[in-house]
Length: 611
Image 1: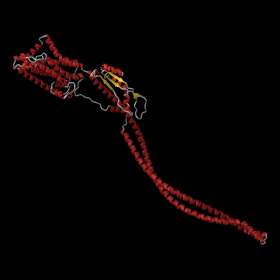
Image 2 (image 1 turned 90 degrees about the horizontal axis):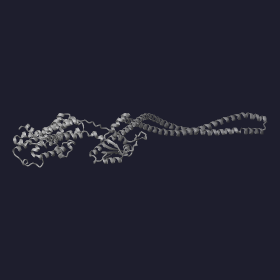
Image 3 (image 1 turned 30 degrees about the vertical axis):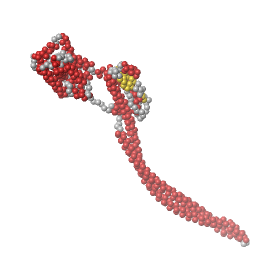
């Protein structure tokens, strides 16, 4: 009996009755139903997030609008809580339902919403507190109820994190723009300060130059006043000598004038005495008059001389008084010149200090001007539009650029390789519930373990190929999944089904119905070690080691490479591993069949408790 005849005989046995046909069709449809229904249910759950009910509680009371140091308070208020609520509702990420705190608590408790998000009363006040003396973080409160749905908690955590980052970006952008506006105002003030410092520096330089000239002049003044003081002292000494000589001359003149005046004053008495004497001498009156007439010119000259003397005495007195005044003035001049010399020397010292100080001031104002100019250069000039862009960049400095070497179109497509591979195992496992692993008749009639093994493997392998073809149709046509390499993907699915058929065949050949049970255990192990949902690196070490051994993980990886447009070399390696499993399982099955052709075992004589 040849292999095709044995396959045909097994198929005739399976379809010998109507119930047999129904059972065969039902088992062939098992992977189609399992994989198709599961992937249909989970094809794109993220697109349904807007239908997930979430309670939104906004208690924010608002806060005064923050200002920069150069702005006056406007009296306006901001309410970031309402802004966040509006953005959430407009974003439609979830079915946001605004409620009061009590309503939200009741809805979360009875399952009307999956989680609640609360924006507290001090939300805006906390966000604007950074500009005051009591900065604090704002809070967004998340409350979940795992009794409703555990994954809803994870969704809520991710949602609140997105809210936090968006609010931080919004508030950070506004704060950065206020900061940049303040810096722009500071820059404008610095520009004015540079202009003032430039004028101050120019004035200081001019003052320093003038003070140098002043110092030179005061030095000359000090020298001149010192010379004047010396001359004035000499003059005062000479004037005092003149005053003393003139005073002596005046005294002599006064005495001479006094004598002449006395002589002049004595003329009438002398005349009377002469008249009396002449009368006594017996002279006649006319003789007396003649004598007196001769004396009268002398009296006249005496009077004239007295007048001259008295005038000269007056002049000498005035000369003496003038000389005394001159001596006093010269003394005062000498004292003043001395004081002037002292003052000029002090002025010279002060002018020198002023010159040095103004030189330092000129140097300092130049440094101030240069420093302010450097400060202006260090703060770039900006415009409102530029500040807005800078603020956005500061608030959100990192933009994530995402690219994919290979990509799945949605969540369902991402799970398809895992559930298609698992469906292949389940389909083969179900087929072996009605397909006989090995024909006892063929073992008895033939002494060719290889042909018997091939016939026992090819029957479920061909039925498994039908299963995979049907599953591929459901994925591609009904669910609309796209495949970068559809023929290669289908080929991997068929090779996987054939490999699983060989493994379960070997288990049945060696262990009978116990082997069928072990096939179920292997399915469970591969379910958790294949890395179909979470990365296999997240598994505990013993299970991670099994990932590198069991075949299901290689089927999943190969399907991903071919379905998403990944690395064909990796897919080739995965197929090579499956080929090793296939060859090894068939070899083990053939060895088992060989053993069965030579001797019977206790299991052959006594049926197993299982099956």
